[in-house]
Length: 176
Image 1: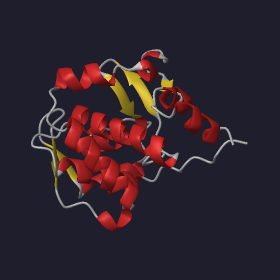
Image 2 (image 1 turned 60 degrees about the vertical axis):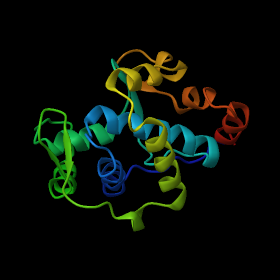
Image 3 (image 1 turned 120 degrees about the vertical axis):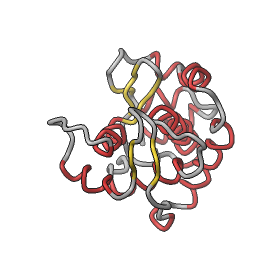
């Protein structure tokens, strides 16, 4: 029996985005997505789950958290039929998009909604990846998990798990 995944919650997800955006010098859709991806990999390795319960899509410049991407598009005011109306409400007082993909946090993250393990993995990812250029973040995220999916398709969490140093243990845990 597989482990039940964490259910995606836009309110918690926006706090993850704010946590990152407040710590990056120039937060963008791309940089936030990649910081989250590397934090998710570490959280999966250590704790057996992803930070937000989001699914990653293999996009041209690397893995992108699908629902968080929709939250960011809502913050930018993009009206697309597949974006939940709730996302606009959650994003409106939290994130502003100043340029096509540049983010500005409108408030601090509510860290009470983030666990110690989530903050630990976010901090590690920020430390390791927060100053990398667009090109370096893209290249680093073009791992075997990203390569396992076609462009614009969901990356199976097991493909992400296979890239981890403790892949065997994580895959066994996910399959319990």
